[in-house]
Length: 121
Image: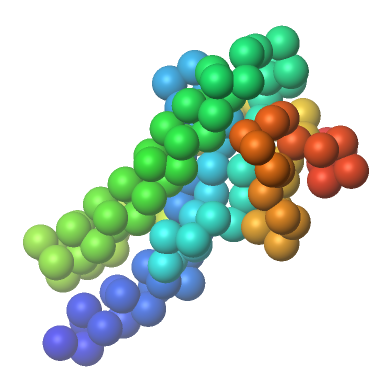
């Protein structure tokens, strides 16, 4: 039982990333599945708003699935290995151009992020 509790604590202390299939958006969630960061590729500005909205949802689902999978591995094997909590099963080959952290308010109306919320890379 102590191994499971320690594994749960390790998972909850981690972060998990996921990406959409077109690699427009990388989302990071914490060990509770809450959004920590959403980062956008440089090409996102040229995309239709609906495409970006869909990419954000897909990246968030992927990040949360990586979290869920970590719990599944823990229950199935009693171990969080080969858990790479920060990578969450995916890697980012190119750094994002800008990102929105969890502390900022989400953009209203589904529009692209307000430039005042953007963090330059």
